[in-house]
Image (tube, rainbow, N blue to C red; front, side):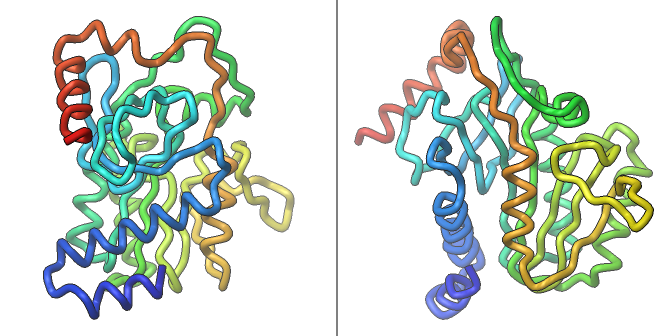
Length: 255
C-alpha cells in the first residue's frame, strides 16, 4: 500500500484521482489476505427499511451476498451480506476524520434482518455489537494529526453524543503511527488483557511495527459468519425502489 501511495503521488495531481488509486490498492490488499469466501468491493450499503450508507470505500461481503455487478464498479450492497466496511484516507486530517466519523454513524444506523433459521457462533459481546451491523474501520496511509489528537476526537465523539458509543468506528489504523480499537466491554473475540489479567475496555491504542497484521487479526476476529437458511435478495425485491435500482445497476454493468 505504501508503494501504491508513491505511485499515486507521481501519477496524479488531482486529489480525487490519487485517493481512488489508494482505495483500490487497499481493496486489493484485503482481497489478497481475507478468506476466499469473501469479496471486496465499494459503493453504498442499504438495509430493508430503506436506510442508506454514504459512498463507502471498502465493502467486504460474504459468499451468499447476491452479486449483481462487477466488484470493480461502485455497487449497491445489502447489509445482511456485508461482513465489514470502512473508509480509506491517503492522508488523515482533522477535517476528514470528522467527516469519516459522520459517515460511520450513517453506516452503523443500518440494521440487518437475520431471517428465519439464521445461525451464528459468537461471544455474547460480539453478537450484541455486530449482530445487526458489521464492523466499521478507517485506514490511513499518512497522518497530519498527532496520536493524542486522534484519541481526543474519538473520546469527544462518544462523550458529546452518547448514541455514538456503539455507532461509530470500531477500529482506526494509521500506517506507521498506530491502531486504535474500541474494545467496548473487553469480552469480544479480539481482546487484550492487562498485567493483572483484566480485559482492556473502551478505546485502546496499539503501536508496533506490524500494524497491518494486527488490523487483519482484529478484522478476522470481529467479522461474524452467519449461516442462513433464507436468501438475502427476496425481501429487497418487494421494495419497488430497490428493485429499480438493482435493474439499473445490472443494466449499467452490462453496457
